Length: 141
Image 1 (cartoon, helix red, strand yellow):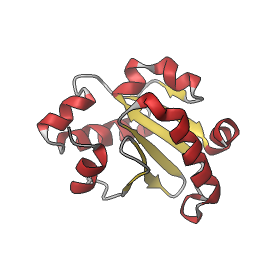
Image 2 (cartoon, helix red, strand yellow):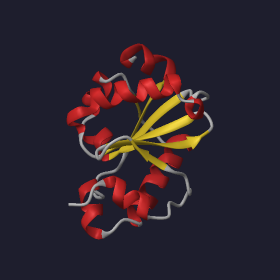
Image 3 (cartoon, rainbow, N blue to C red):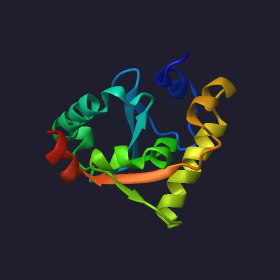
């Protein structure tokens, strides 16, 4: 099975933003000057990965202006309690922001090779969750 890092970085993203992988199962993408979106392949080491991300958010010049961490995925839909226990707020509805992230997620899925796309459960509507940088640092610093 191919790891996300190899797959995502080999594709031209519709947004042309860079996915920065911290390891083979976790990374982030700078969505806007003040927003990053996390990418999760495997949830087994999420807390470890979050502690490392908190260190980067605090110390990296590139991430200093980040105010919001988001997640858009089938994982949010199927495991909302997990994300809530990790401090994220699950947002429901059809706001412009939520739709933007869901549309981007679905577009990126459509660009993946079929064998990889299946890992992302394309039949499941992606959910959207977010946490402020301030709250994230309180939990994981």
